[in-house]
Amino acid sequence: MSRGGEVVTGTVTTKVPARLDRLPWSRWHRMIVIGLGTVWILDGLEVTVVGNIAGRLSEAGSGLPITSAQVTGVAAALYVAGACSGALFFGWLTDRYGRKKLFLITLTVYLTATALTAISFSVWWFYLFRFLTGFGIGGEYAAINSAIDELIPSRFRGRVDLIINGSYWLGAMGGALLSVLALDTDIFPKDVGWRLTFALGVVLGLAVLLVRRHVPESPRWMFIHGQSEEAEKVVDEAERAIEEETGRPLPEAENEITVEQRHSVGFIEIGKTVFRDYPRRATLGFALFVGQAFLYNAITFGFGSILVTFFDVSTGTTGYFFAAIAFCNFLGPLFLGRLFDTWGRRPMIAGTYILSGVLLFLTAWLFDAGRLDAITMTLCWCVVLFFASAGASSAYLTVSEIFPMETRAMAIAFFYAIGTAAGGISGPLLFAGLTQSGVVGDAALAFCVGAALMVIAGLVAVFFAVVAEQKSLEQIAAPLSTVTSQDSALRRGADAKKPGSPPGTSAG
Image: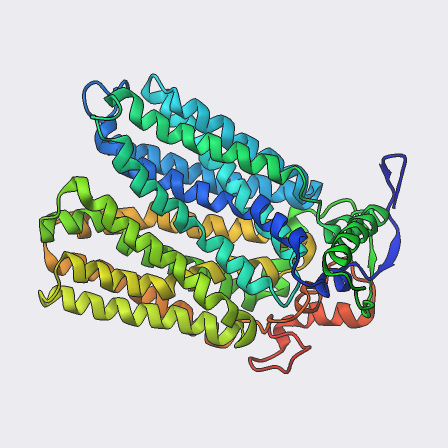
């Protein structure tokens, strides 16, 4: 509880999680999705725009003395480094100080850094604010995923999380098309068009910030951190709004939980919890993030070079091909997301990973055999990424729901940093030479590497994926603060259960 703004901890019994999970879908939830989920559109916009404007920035008269290699190499690496470090830094703060404080701060960091990128006048300035833009975006992933999963009812959590994460590709599609417009010198001068693309990100971010101000703090975080009265008030307000919208009373919540409130959890306890108490789940998170990172780099890192080198596609039109790929990436989570809540996490995670890997192997074989042209190659990528995007989005869903509440944001940050580093550092180092060598066999090998890691991750999911569909977060992983013996046993014995455990038990 809190007295006069001072947080006082103690033992509290609450029905807040059960009350949140039994809510029907409503305007309140849509406001949360719009306020928190649209940041992925901004991330997709950022990454795609920079890749597409690299050629223009390197031209004389762009207003910035930088080469294309510096934009796609050094600046991209700094963005990745910023995202990794921002995720870890803000992830720790999110678990310590709350979801709302941090998702307002991280968006402000992004907005400021992007605006200052738009007025870059030197290479060092551009580098600095690309790093800080990534720093803000990385923090967003930890703060937003944890807040969304803690506010969305359990029966909708899978599909909502997947669609939100998949919306990255709406931003990517918009970025690809926007770059075609912004780089048209008949419309904008060379030194103006690329700046406007960053300015658009600021405008969209400000609109998101206006909505986000009304998104509440996570009641789940609040009651564990000595703010139980405030948590009850947030849920009371949501229930009143939903009852007014539906015109009928809500059913009584049944399950309650008792916790020993605490101010914060240290790094050592977080590390022990994730890797000692949940080693199978940690292995699952690592496999899923690395697998999807390498598959996406195998395709997207060199897609432009492959189209230009092997199919004589004009560099000015590759943006249209990428927009098609991005659209199919969004369709995957949109159409398959519901199945993660109905068919279940294990079959859908394993299925999307393995199927996309197998389809990429087939694409590599057709490409190596000379049976594809630019259109059919893009269609193959679209089919692969339709399934891979749902799988990749489920990686974020998985690590955000399978660890205790007190460690959630930090766990998301850790595995996101692993995946981002693998994709942004190891991936380019491995795939750059293969996809740009001009040798068909080299590019096909890049596809096979990504496909193999995706299939391996899918096989890990077959054995280690957690039965989390339709379950509250507290059933999946009891909070560290839980004081009942039953919940304590659930937490400590998480990895003792074998795959296929019946509902209501832990599956590792």
